[in-house]
Length: 253
Image (cartoon, rainbow, N blue to C red):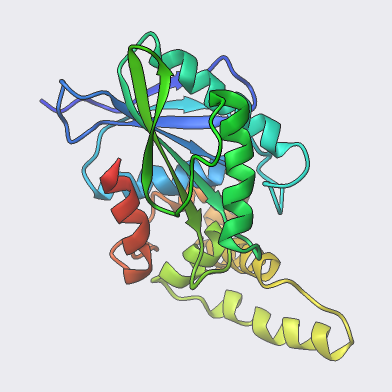
């Protein structure tokens, strides 16, 4: 009988990670994903479920759920703390790989790589661990322990965030959300600007709440029309081609 998902509450309060079973083989170590927020966790949990991978979840984000650009400011030390926590775990239990999944936003990939490498250097004392997106590098924890580390950036065509991906893979009616295009044009005609990534976040919120929640659900929108609830609904195309690079990354861990 396959192992059921097990929820664990981590003792490190500033990150979110969850374990993915390695090809269902008991001889191989766990694969750990470190992600930015609860929303990333809900999405990846749903995606991984479609890929028939097992996971144990440790819960706490290293970024706040309402951070619009998480990987700025003090979030690099928080990512470093997350990595140190997994590094310490690897001395006590078998861990094969650490996958880091963050938003690209409007930054170049090399900028995100540099930021993540700073966090890896602070936690593993290794320079320039990540050189390419989606590839794994083996690093030494101590004489007897090694783990692989890889980075994936949530994006569509080299720009964007989780919500940009969700906007692309929606498969339900989006009449209300699509009306936001007229609202954006009105704002721009008034001489104001709106970042594409911010627009995507707003679009997904409206899609979930007004296009894909009924009137009864909207009375409890905070609980029944949020990201966690929406990932349990058949409103996303998890077979969309835009997800292939992410699936390839997860499959490589």
